[in-house]
Length: 196
Image (cartoon, rainbow, N blue to C red; front, side, top):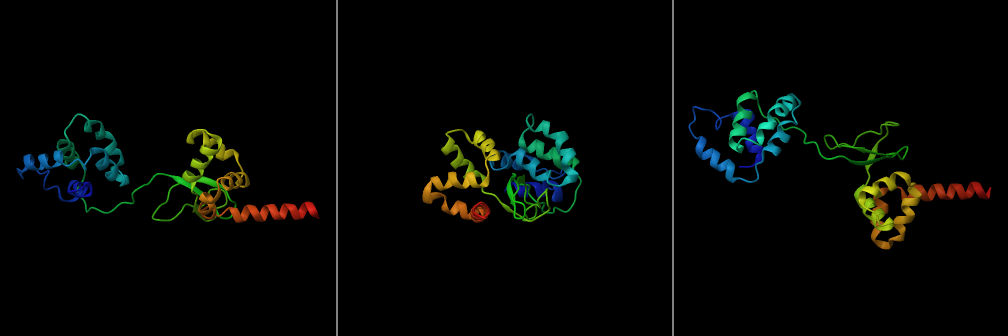
């Protein structure tokens, strides 16, 4: 039994949580033994449904003082019975780069689609910020938290020059960023303007 089975049981079936069933002890033992089922994950999955956010927030304080099985029984007793529908699981935010204006901003993917740029509304691609931060922190010899601040101050050209300093190991990263060609074109354009 995994955490999604438990959520489905709480929302849709409610058989294990029925007082008439009389199987509390065996089910309680199974829940307590299964370390993959945590109250936190059950709360998180249930709160993906917007209707359950407030009720879950109200009762989650009891997850620490009740056993897992008692807490799950509490959830099943007050949440309405309905057909379990898969809800989009909200993932951690990551950085995105606008293909039109080049702006980098934090965002979340929804239904497998990247968010639109908040500035111009253009299409975006995921920006490999973790890899860049790792190299910036190595270059400046600072923590990744400080490197995150440095990244906001650096231009694309400066980031590319730093990454090129690490040699062949950053070549795939430069291609993935999609800004190497753009920066080279801007540099050529500037040199042509200076020459003319």
